[in-house]
Length: 166
Image (cartoon, rainbow, N blue to C red; front, top):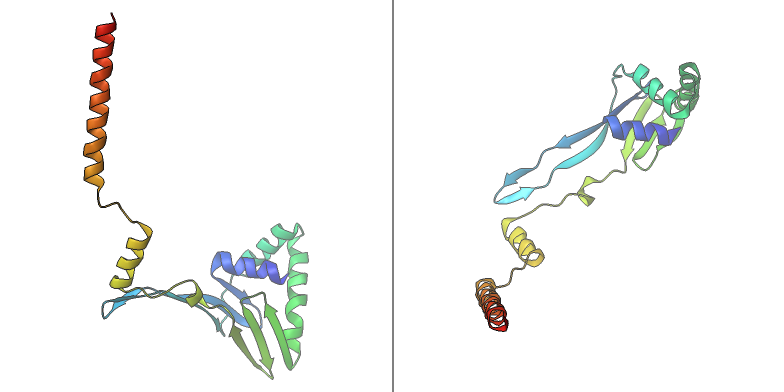
Protein backbone atom coordinates (compact mmCIF):
# COMPACT_ATOMS: atom_id res chain seq x y z
CA UNK A 1 0.00 0.00 0.00
CA UNK A 2 2.86 2.42 0.81
CA UNK A 3 4.36 1.92 -2.66
CA UNK A 4 0.98 2.75 -4.18
CA UNK A 5 0.75 5.94 -2.13
CA UNK A 6 4.30 6.90 -3.15
CA UNK A 7 3.35 6.40 -6.83
CA UNK A 8 0.29 8.59 -6.33
CA UNK A 9 2.43 11.28 -4.68
CA UNK A 10 4.98 11.22 -7.52
CA UNK A 11 2.25 11.48 -10.19
CA UNK A 12 0.32 14.29 -8.47
CA UNK A 13 2.99 16.19 -6.54
CA UNK A 14 1.00 16.00 -3.32
CA UNK A 15 -0.98 13.61 -1.15
CA UNK A 16 -3.29 14.32 1.78
CA UNK A 17 -3.27 11.83 4.63
CA UNK A 18 -6.13 12.23 7.11
CA UNK A 19 -4.94 12.93 10.62
CA UNK A 20 -1.37 13.53 9.45
CA UNK A 21 -1.32 16.34 6.89
CA UNK A 22 -0.46 16.97 3.26
CA UNK A 23 2.87 16.05 1.69
CA UNK A 24 3.82 18.45 -1.11
CA UNK A 25 6.61 18.51 -3.62
CA UNK A 26 7.84 22.12 -3.62
CA UNK A 27 10.12 23.55 -6.27
CA UNK A 28 12.40 26.57 -6.60
CA UNK A 29 13.15 27.60 -10.16
CA UNK A 30 16.71 28.00 -11.48
CA UNK A 31 18.10 31.55 -11.45
CA UNK A 32 21.22 33.55 -12.33
CA UNK A 33 23.42 34.76 -9.49
CA UNK A 34 26.76 36.53 -10.04
CA UNK A 35 27.34 34.95 -13.46
CA UNK A 36 26.38 31.46 -12.34
CA UNK A 37 23.21 29.50 -13.10
CA UNK A 38 21.94 28.23 -9.75
CA UNK A 39 20.26 24.85 -10.19
CA UNK A 40 16.58 24.37 -9.45
CA UNK A 41 15.75 22.83 -6.10
CA UNK A 42 13.01 20.40 -5.15
CA UNK A 43 12.04 19.30 -1.68
CA UNK A 44 9.18 17.56 0.08
CA UNK A 45 7.37 19.33 2.91
CA UNK A 46 4.61 18.32 5.30
CA UNK A 47 1.80 20.84 5.76
CA UNK A 48 -0.62 20.44 8.65
CA UNK A 49 -3.67 21.24 6.52
CA UNK A 50 -5.63 18.61 4.63
CA UNK A 51 -6.47 19.24 0.98
CA UNK A 52 -9.68 17.56 -0.07
CA UNK A 53 -8.56 14.97 -2.61
CA UNK A 54 -9.46 11.80 -0.78
CA UNK A 55 -12.00 10.74 -3.42
CA UNK A 56 -9.35 10.98 -6.13
CA UNK A 57 -6.85 9.05 -3.97
CA UNK A 58 -9.36 6.34 -3.10
CA UNK A 59 -10.33 6.02 -6.77
CA UNK A 60 -6.63 5.63 -7.65
CA UNK A 61 -6.12 2.93 -4.97
CA UNK A 62 -9.31 1.18 -6.09
CA UNK A 63 -8.23 1.13 -9.74
CA UNK A 64 -4.65 0.02 -9.04
CA UNK A 65 -5.62 -2.81 -6.66
CA UNK A 66 -8.79 -3.71 -8.57
CA UNK A 67 -10.97 -3.44 -5.46
CA UNK A 68 -14.04 -1.42 -4.52
CA UNK A 69 -13.74 2.14 -3.24
CA UNK A 70 -15.08 1.00 0.16
CA UNK A 71 -12.34 -1.65 0.41
CA UNK A 72 -9.74 0.92 -0.68
CA UNK A 73 -11.00 3.27 2.06
CA UNK A 74 -10.75 0.47 4.66
CA UNK A 75 -7.19 -0.47 3.66
CA UNK A 76 -6.13 3.19 3.58
CA UNK A 77 -7.62 3.80 7.04
CA UNK A 78 -5.95 0.65 8.45
CA UNK A 79 -2.57 1.91 7.21
CA UNK A 80 -2.96 5.31 8.91
CA UNK A 81 -4.71 4.16 12.14
CA UNK A 82 -1.55 3.23 14.09
CA UNK A 83 0.02 6.59 13.24
CA UNK A 84 -3.04 8.47 14.42
CA UNK A 85 -3.83 6.43 17.58
CA UNK A 86 -0.38 5.73 19.06
CA UNK A 87 1.70 8.28 20.99
CA UNK A 88 5.05 7.34 19.43
CA UNK A 89 5.19 5.94 15.92
CA UNK A 90 7.23 6.06 12.70
CA UNK A 91 5.92 5.36 9.22
CA UNK A 92 8.31 5.00 6.27
CA UNK A 93 7.02 6.54 3.07
CA UNK A 94 9.00 4.54 0.56
CA UNK A 95 12.43 5.95 -0.16
CA UNK A 96 11.14 9.53 0.09
CA UNK A 97 11.21 9.87 3.87
CA UNK A 98 9.63 9.02 7.22
CA UNK A 99 6.76 10.35 9.29
CA UNK A 100 7.54 10.55 13.02
CA UNK A 101 4.97 11.02 15.76
CA UNK A 102 5.70 12.03 19.34
CA UNK A 103 2.62 12.84 21.35
CA UNK A 104 0.36 14.93 19.15
CA UNK A 105 3.19 16.30 16.98
CA UNK A 106 3.84 14.71 13.58
CA UNK A 107 7.03 15.61 11.71
CA UNK A 108 8.47 14.68 8.33
CA UNK A 109 12.07 13.60 7.74
CA UNK A 110 12.69 13.87 4.00
CA UNK A 111 15.26 11.61 2.34
CA UNK A 112 14.72 13.17 -1.08
CA UNK A 113 17.81 15.11 -2.19
CA UNK A 114 17.33 16.94 -5.48
CA UNK A 115 20.92 18.20 -5.51
CA UNK A 116 21.90 14.72 -6.66
CA UNK A 117 20.07 15.44 -9.93
CA UNK A 118 20.75 19.17 -10.38
CA UNK A 119 24.07 21.02 -10.30
CA UNK A 120 24.98 24.72 -10.52
CA UNK A 121 26.53 25.79 -13.83
CA UNK A 122 28.94 28.60 -14.58
CA UNK A 123 29.47 29.77 -18.20
CA UNK A 124 33.17 28.77 -18.16
CA UNK A 125 32.28 25.28 -16.95
CA UNK A 126 29.52 25.02 -19.54
CA UNK A 127 31.89 26.05 -22.36
CA UNK A 128 34.50 23.48 -21.27
CA UNK A 129 31.89 20.74 -21.09
CA UNK A 130 30.44 21.61 -24.50
CA UNK A 131 33.92 21.61 -26.03
CA UNK A 132 34.67 18.23 -24.48
CA UNK A 133 31.42 16.69 -25.72
CA UNK A 134 31.24 18.27 -29.18
CA UNK A 135 34.75 18.50 -30.60
CA UNK A 136 34.75 19.57 -34.22
CA UNK A 137 37.71 19.06 -36.48
CA UNK A 138 39.68 22.24 -37.15
CA UNK A 139 40.37 21.31 -40.76
CA UNK A 140 36.74 20.88 -41.83
CA UNK A 141 37.03 23.34 -44.72
CA UNK A 142 40.23 21.71 -45.97
CA UNK A 143 38.57 18.28 -45.99
CA UNK A 144 35.68 19.54 -48.14
CA UNK A 145 38.04 21.01 -50.69
CA UNK A 146 40.09 17.81 -50.95
CA UNK A 147 37.03 15.56 -51.25
CA UNK A 148 35.38 17.76 -53.86
CA UNK A 149 38.58 17.72 -55.99
CA UNK A 150 38.83 13.90 -55.72
CA UNK A 151 35.16 13.36 -56.65
CA UNK A 152 35.37 15.81 -59.57
CA UNK A 153 38.54 14.16 -60.90
CA UNK A 154 37.05 10.67 -60.69
CA UNK A 155 33.86 11.89 -62.43
CA UNK A 156 35.82 13.46 -65.30
CA UNK A 157 37.96 10.32 -65.72
CA UNK A 158 34.85 8.11 -65.85
CA UNK A 159 33.25 10.34 -68.49
CA UNK A 160 36.45 10.28 -70.58
CA UNK A 161 36.74 6.49 -70.24
CA UNK A 162 33.14 6.01 -71.38
CA UNK A 163 33.60 8.29 -74.40
CA UNK A 164 36.89 6.68 -75.45
CA UNK A 165 35.69 3.09 -75.08
CA UNK A 166 32.79 3.60 -77.57
